[in-house]
Image 1 (cartoon, one colour):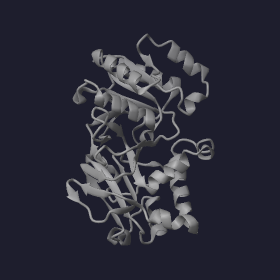
Image 2: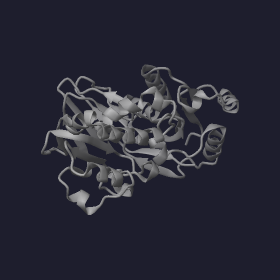
Image 3: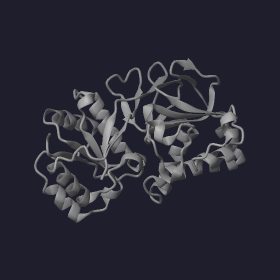
Image 4: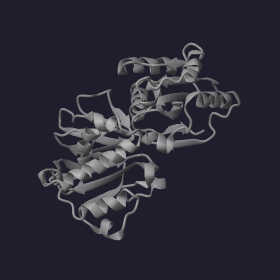
Length: 326
């Protein structure tokens, strides 16, 4: 087994924008070919193809959710066989770190790199692994460009992401808290009579789950994830968090949902009361594939994805990925 790792470093990630001279010194001292800071998706793909020829024991991803998703997307598009992908060690450095909250390494900076090197040297690369199947978003007209990630949605969630991307939120809220702020600000829009009706009316999309067409075309919000844990105890799905690894956990909230605020209050705390499960406004479960027919975008880990040329967006459970824990 190889005893080296490859570091993919995003210098634009929030924490990495703060100069850490000790960390920079450690990175500069790494042997040639171990540290990569690609400036584009095309360059990242070339890095991944290069790594596949001399595979490392693990790939260290220093960045946020977007960086992790980009690395996984590059792996998926590469000639590297899925079953031989190395483990990933995620060092949380981004604006949002939902992935790291579930499967992150737990350390970052020089301490993380030194611990990883020691473990590899001692033949302990496979200690503390967690496996997850990322979401794969496929679209006609984007063949070979499938996007991988772990948390996505549309409707009110996509509108909330627009709010979260505003400078006032990005500059004042850090990391995974930004997602919670997004949800809070989204629901705050419902207090305003001017905004309430347009938000509650939802968006139009035909939804099929594992090949079965679902009733209703108007959706207030659709959420899905293949993570097993979210920050602050939130878990807006009926599936048990520790049993969610077999596919895609989803929540479909219909337009003009009943008792929205009590439902949100419970789901943001990971509670699913019996009345919520009985309500026809809320449908949740686990699936291998969701297919949307819509003219509206789907947001995956903060990235806005347009439908394919046929108006479809397919979200499926991807190949298993191993993540290293400290």
